[in-house]
Amino acid sequence: MEEQAIASQTKPSVDELERLIIQSLRLEETGITAIDPDSALFGDGLGLDSIDALELALVISKEYGVTISSEQPDIQRIFSSLNHLTAYLQDQRAV
Image 1 (spheres, rainbow, N blue to C red):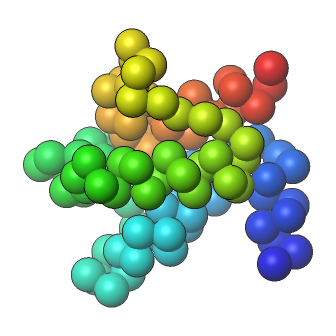
Image 2: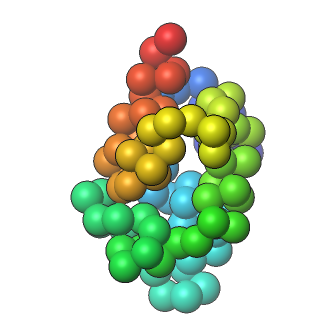
């Protein structure tokens, strides 16, 4: 619990966000224990779907206080890879 409180007060790293995605989407149950930071999160990459995007947006909002809306014009770029998602969250946390 203390680790989560610390995470929500800092800018997320790629490793931290990777762990959050794997844990919150229960990917370890499917054998996924690591995410290539440059690979696609959806479709042919990691294989996430729209339900996963909603769950992930909710977890990110709770953990980091950053809202990601499907109405955002750059939503596809934000969720295109772990690196893009991390960069977006870091930018939002800097504001």
